[in-house]
Length: 171
Length: 370
Image 1 (cartoon, rainbow over the protein chains, first blue to last red):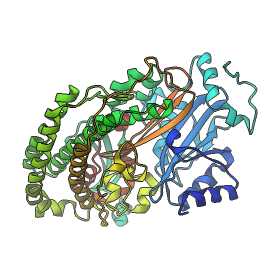
Image 2: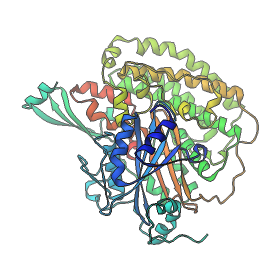
Image 3: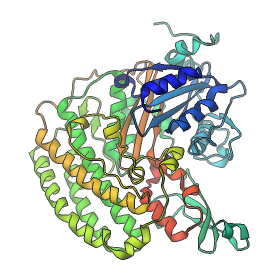
């Protein structure tokens, strides 16, 4: 892959849902919606396309936990953000064997959200102490907050699978 | 080296840190040793964990400004810059042109003092005490300049959404110009004292094999990456603020060892001085603060803002929900990814070389722990 357009073309072939966004407003070029089953193939594709993993992060929504992966490329400007909703048992496949740096990022996400990364080599607490494993500090505790947050992404997620639990905020 | 590992008879565990002079903060590394050889270094993080990301979610966004300075204490202004940048991007606010120039000038001064401190402590880690005395003399001059305008010497809280809190004056401009001259006159001395020193070179040449592939697998960024020959710098790759208006080089080396990282950083000092010179020449007049609504709410949606810190790529990823409190803020810090390659990089290395590697990575632990 040598340009943003070839990256988009490669994604469309899989097919992976990809959308170009305005860099000046969002700070990244491509937004991607993944199914959990596509995650490892997606990572493999980026690995051969010479991308590097910038970070893995989470977001607690009314629909569940949304894990986001940001990748960027050393050779040409193409920063992308991929969203995956966790499986019903709160887990996702690991990509730590594809991008070795994901090892720590996944441990951090486990610390903060309790997301289990299947087949991770060492899913021990990284930043939290060992006896704080149940703390999951970034989960939203107040239900009101959780509902309000749904407005940020729910439209996009709803394209694939409508989430009946979500209440949209009245504008 | 695997032969030593396979024998496994004389293995022992050495605990380095959490209080150790060459871990530069409360970092613990559990070292499985075979004689003087490190067979398995495993960093243990979290001693300085404060959960800045949770703090960001539990207070209105302006109240997080001081936090931004307390992650990486060596590049507080650059963290300021990233944070106000991401809020401005999400809320659709533009800072005034003068403010953008002031941000670049103060950020580059901040980068210079970080590089000067690194130069001193790297050599100190390797056993030479004198150079840090010289680099601190230079660094003090920067801190004095910044203190006059920002009010602090380390944990700056200077930038605001829409601009900077206080305009710079003639004294600042003159002081910075004098400093540029002074710093240029010092570089030949560092070349003789450190770069050309045969003992120093033997300690870091051909130590640490950083490669473009290793970098991609671990997300390595910053001067260490540029030492492998990849000219990747956020200031050039995804230009932010007014960086496109300046003429500067991205120094690279090809050897990918600790010496390469060292040479890149030293050459970056000159590039930062060049940016400073041009920014002072072009500095526009006008207000240093734009008109910003008093109660600014963060719209629903998300935005990223990436900046180049002295250690690599720093990304703020902010998700808003229409209130004045961020719904989520992820902070991607460069040292976190840079340190994560230590177990692979340093396997089979001499203990003293591990110190050289950690020194070259220029780790700031509070930034990793957040």
